[in-house]
Length: 255
Ligand SMILES: [Zn+2]
Image (cartoon, rainbow, N blue to C red; front, side, top):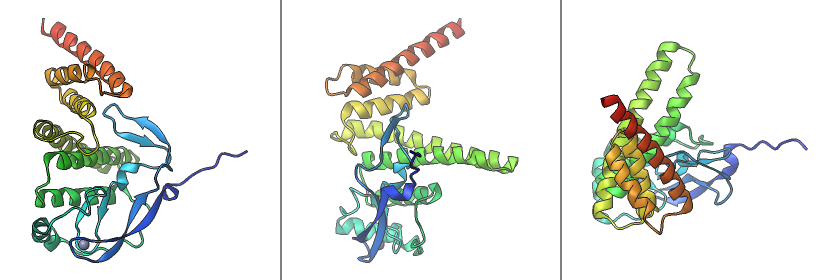
């Protein structure tokens, strides 16, 4: 039997929505639940699915006024927040015709997540929500950086890769700093992440930015928390080995 090839559009559907900010109807693309098969995750828990990058579909965005938010947060805006969003986001937004969109490109997904971030700032969302968006935008730029490898013109390729890389890094740093504030000020779970999972993600980010002491401290906490999942503990152990190796390297290099 021949292998069946699947395409991204099989895993999503158009859902009718009414925007709570401008009251107009529109359709958004939504993941079919439990349809895509999870392949695993990157070292920082960025999820990977077969045939589709589910991260592109996390945000719901109104094409009429620009109001955007994670699907779970989309309906939850109060009148004062709506006024701020209208003033700070909608007045700068030109309505878009998205009827021709079949699947989201990385550019479209990044643009909608950036709109969601602007709305989160306008509605004075908590650090957790904003940091989660920064993390997703960083992950999307990382993917766009990979796509840049296919650009044939060498100068253009290098320029695009560098642009995406610097965007990915700056959003990752915002997420790293914001998640640390969220851990101090907010109750977990934060955006669906329980405490040890979030500690692990922050530890990985600290490791990424060379802040080994911060990373080591958080890993210690993950490993002693009983509510940490086996997967998160296994990953924490791997990261711990890597941190120890780097600290040793640093010491021997300092001699
Ligand atoms: Zn709207």
